[in-house]
Length: 338
Image (cartoon, rainbow, N blue to C red; front, top):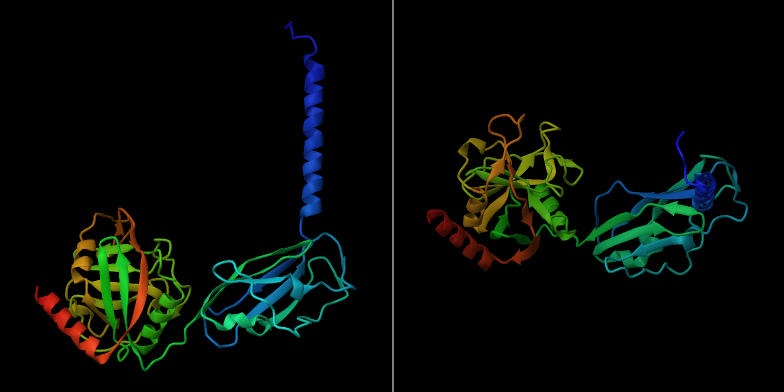
């Protein structure tokens, strides 16, 4: 018979009692802190122009285990929070009182809601920037919805974009004559900061670099696709092309783009040409030489993953005058000869 230290069983019983008590307290605390309602914000629009309406769907759902008395109605307006990128709170417009017609009782799993024009509730949304919409209230849980408001695109202006990388800058000049929708989309993404911290996530060694994935995976992007804008534009070294989305067949990715390091005459008429590198073609060629890893199931000729992430630190826009456009064209021709 094994000898146990005297008093060991009482100690074990005490420890088990404390553990059971702690578990009971934890369950009670969780039940008390679990939200009774969830407030969910959603929009189908990736970004908005300054001054445009900003529609957001607001849904309030009973997530408790019982019917909720709502005879006094929830203070939905008082619970809404709109913050700018620095955490500053936007003030609601004076005179806004009722957001949604509410039921007097909300059964288990029942919900109600409507589309709100949040720019009418928070007039500060008229300015370009990134904003966070959330809800704070007793017994309520909420998601955070990020809203992007960008400067309105002016099709009469010409722009260039400067891409900052650890290998040096790359400056591209847009060709809005051949791909007006794609150029506008790229500029809007730059203005909302989409590409900052992004990656050149795939490399065609010695041939081209592919960027536009926020995670480094080819399936990640802006969340939408574009109809191609094909033209008979030549594809020399330094051509910026919108990449096709492999999962959607003929559609272009909303954010992925390719910059060629060599001429690709075989792509003429088969791709959407966004523009041309006017400075930094050597940077493109350098990135094309970095070590890569090819996925085992990748078909021949597909881009490979760089061993180390190639970050796009940021992309900035500049308006181009006619005089500057002439200088850029001359510089681009000289760089190609070199």
